[in-house]
Image (tube, rainbow, N blue to C red; front, side):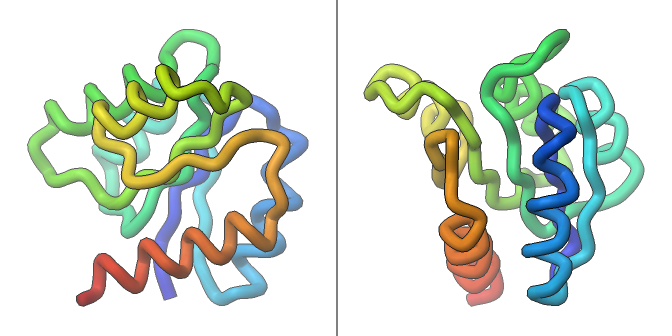
Amino acid sequence: MAMILFVDDDELLHPLVGKVLQDAGHSLIFAADGERACALAREQPFELIVLDYEMPKMTGIDVLTHLKMMGTGLPPVIMLTARGDAETVQACIGAGARDFIVKPFNVEELLRRVTQHLGAGQG
């Protein structure tokens, strides 16, 4: 169905999220930091990015800024954050994220949001 980039420095999430999204028919590529995410995005287009807000080296906001500067068009981005405060949410949306999910999150909720944003992008 869709090629998704999942970026999170908590590599324990990768198999769990991978199973749920792959069982739904999506292809996933994982990155454990923002630098790797940016490198992968230069190599190939993604239909959706699930991006952690707080990571070493580059924050999720830094990654969004870099991806927008690439000029290839930003796919829908769902930001994952342990911070649910209004300031963080506004920063994510202001940087270009379409949605956010507060950690810890339910993988079924993530799947619902992924499906929602992929459907909106195909309209």
